[in-house]
Each structure stands twice: as C-alpha cells, then as structure tokens.
Image 1: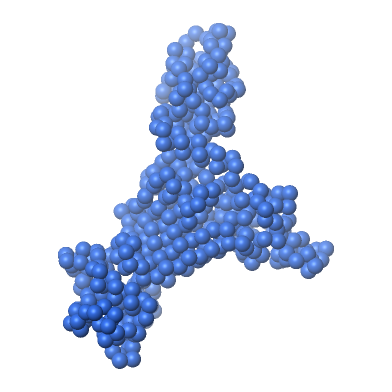
Image 2 (image 1 turned 180 degrees about the vertical axis):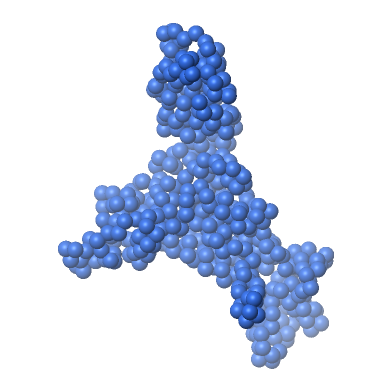
Length: 461
C-alpha cells in the first residue's frame, strides 16, 4: 500500500469521518480527484475495525451532508493484507468545495484551511479557467498572422511534437489555393484554436495579426524608475512579443569577453544566462492573466532585471518550491501552454522555474507576487555602487542626483551636446558640468565616443 500524498488520505476508522470530509474538500480544490480510505493507518498498513452495511451508508450520508457542491463518490470495499477497508473514490470540477462550510487546500499530505484572499483567488482562477481561453472572438482565420503561424508549424514539426501535414506553407488567400493545399484553418482546427469559424481567445493571443497584446520595455539609470535610458512599447501576439522581449534583453544586458585557450578565440558571456532569461520571458506570457487590463513589462534597472506579467503567481506554492522539490504545476492557460510546448518554447510543463534556479542559483532570483501582477527579478552587479576598480563607493549608494538626471535626459535627446550646450541648458558652471559628466562616466552611465570637438556621448546600459 502506498503512503499518503496529495491525492490519497488514510483514516483508521469511521470515527474520523469529519476529518475525512475535510480531506475530500482539500484534495478536490487542489487536484479535482482523489481517494480516501477508512481502515488504513498513516503508514499504509490496514487497521481492523467493524464494517457493516450501515457503515457504508454513514460514509455516503456524511459526504452528502458535508461536501458542497454535491459530489457523487464511488464507495467500495477493498481487502488489504487480509483486512477489509473502505475505499472512497471522488472527483469533481466545480471548485471551490467546502466541508462543513469551510474551504481547504491540500499541501503534501496535510489539509490547510484557505484564508479569504486564497479563496477569492481560487474562485477567480476557476472562473478564468472555465471561461476565457475557449471563448470565441470576432476574429477569423483572415486575422491570423500567416508568418507567425508558419514559423510555429515549422518549429513544432522539426522538434517532432507535431506531425507533418500535407502542405508546405500557409496561404490565407483562398484564390491561391489548389486542391492539394489546405489553408491555415485546418491547422488551427486541429489545435482547437478556432471553432465555428471564429478564433478562440487563446488563438487570438497566439496568432492574431491585430496586435492583441502590449509589452512595455525600459532601461533605467538607477535601481528606481527615476531616469530612463531607453523605453520601448511593442504591440503584437504572444510569439511576436516573446521575440521582441528577448531581443530587447539581449541588447541591454552586459556581456564580458573571454579569450579561448588559444588566446585568439573570443567568447562573449552574458551577465545572466540567456536560457534562464528566455525561460522567464516565456513563462511571463504562458502564465499571465489575459482578462485584466495590465500589460506585460520588462524593466532593466542598474541592479536587477524585472519581468512582469498580469496576474498573480498561478499556484499556491512559492516559486522557490519548484526548485526544492517536485510539486504540481497549475496551468492557468492550458491551451497557450500546450502551443508553446509544441514548438519547444516550453520544454516540459512545470520545469521552467527549476531550470531558472538551476542556471542562476537561488540567490540571484527573487519575485514579487500580488493580486494583479507577478514579477520575477534577476539580480545584477550595480555599476552605480562600484568604482572602475571594483571597490564600493559609499557616497553613490546606487542613486544619481537631480543634476546628473537632468544631464542624462539632455544627452539622450541630443548625444552631441557639448559642455557649452549643457552650461546653457542647465545654467551651471563649467566646473560643475565637468564634475557631473565625470561622475556619470565613473558610474558607467555614459561614455565619450570620438574627440571632444567632433565626437558624441553614448548612453550605456
């Protein structure tokens, strides 16, 4: 007999009927199905107690009275090592379930009462799960971005997660089709992303050419959202924005150069593993809430990179728990996650966080989780707190002053401003301007390219 786990509960006798009802509700709220035994000890060995016809009726009646909404379990007798026990198999999708008017959740082999915020999130997530992804939109196959769809198909076929279909390209103009060239609708129907000629919400977010999503990306001079060095706003579908986000991060992170053993070959090493960054970006789009008006966001600060998606973390576990042990992964967007899996943007379900922690180390990863957004952050060396020789500058403390902020903004608008121009714009002395420029250079926020006369300033990331 196996031990207790997240979907299996043991009770010694029906004297623990009430406790058994709590276990049923907690398992249903977590996994939608499970098994409860009466007559089994915690270690999985049978415990002999008297079972009659009325015992079975008592179990059935208690489930009917205690569990709401009502479920219809299968109650049977089973023999374990010569001892008869009661087995209750139950399932239900109408979460949340209560026992005696209270709500519980399963954690390992224990039942924990849900607090009001957890219960509210469970109910919101259930409503989202039932209603959002499969709802039909007003868009049709003519609204599909054929380039994105074709690229997805090629990748999914090449990694053997989608069987090859009898056509080479997707043509949405029916006049260009011949009898041997099915259009994109066939593929979308097989993927369950179009129904009755209309794209589902999931299909629209993945493949629409009408730019259904917004991604804001910015680089900031310090560890706060005070002065930005670059800001970009992109609109597109999930695949387009994943690519845009990854390119933006690659462009703006720092790289170091290492020479190979031959002393000639140059190897460029990113400050944060690219695999981890891409995994976080894909997770950002795979697990987001799409029924609330919050945009995806990537912020590159002097001391960290923040990747934010709409919707709280879609699991009662903490992200670090996925690194420490095998835990059940709840898919907020099962259809979207499945499509990303088919083209190998998602390697395997539930392994993304473990990969991120493994590549970076848990000390490099942090997160912020609230009711409306989830943010994963990668720490990075803060150049604002380091001198060029690597020692800590206690006076800088990761910030820039108001004059430095003003000059940064001016140089972003016109990198060819001279000291004379800056004196005119700020009404400061030459000595003050030169000291401020030297400070910004020491903090590695700007550098001079070319001569003082004909060169220009370059904003560093």
